[in-house]
Image (cartoon, rainbow, N blue to C red; front, side, top):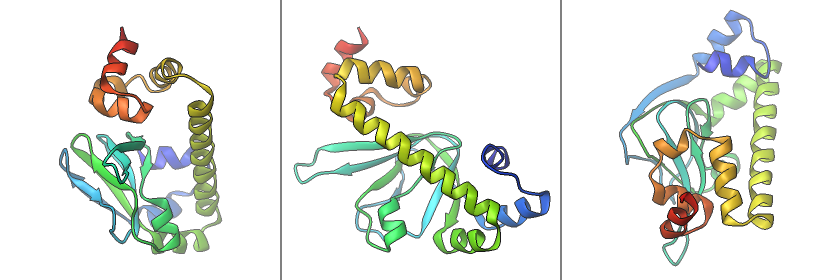
Length: 184
């Protein structure tokens, strides 16, 4: 799965991919298990093989804001903490049982220095993530809840059956009751 994912953005020989893959550590998590908690040191990013993760922030009023759902072939971490060597402000946990590949930040940097195509892959993956985040932010600024809900279902129809409705509501920035009305 990782090989096909990488191949969408760059090409690696079999030997290069084997070297790349050797730096990942497979991990399994149970539904509800925390992968990153606010205040943690963060030194890994996670490639989802199976299951679904959520990245979220809880504000001072204890309101949850979901930044991302991460399904198979998606990546998740607290990237500010990872890249800036600060404590986590973003939490990552498991909506379902999940299998992930963990890549340490030091290994990612080592691989990028060793293999130009790996650096190319990570640069394009980061760019695509930035563009997706920018589109989501613009949607929040420009569209009403109904439009954001329809957009989410159109882009990621599998989420509706995988993710509890209260989490979809938190992702959209609406109440569970509002989501029920939008669904009708």
